[in-house]
Image (cartoon, rainbow, N blue to C red; front, top):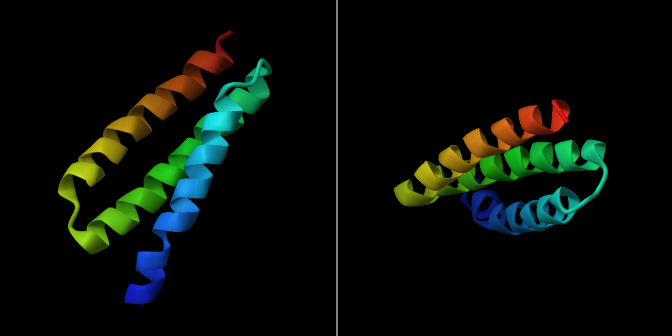
Length: 78
């Protein structure tokens, strides 16, 4: 299981990059999907951070998740 968690940082990085690409879209639907993708990356980073006891990373990802949730609501209102 430890090897799987160690490997998790690579999919987390790819999901984060994909989300960043989607956020740059002119279409609101894609931006919302980008924020949802960012939330998935936040969860992946938190899981990895718990395993490695990276408490600052966990705090950062939690705060970023809140901003991503806010981004979803801000996009739906435009």
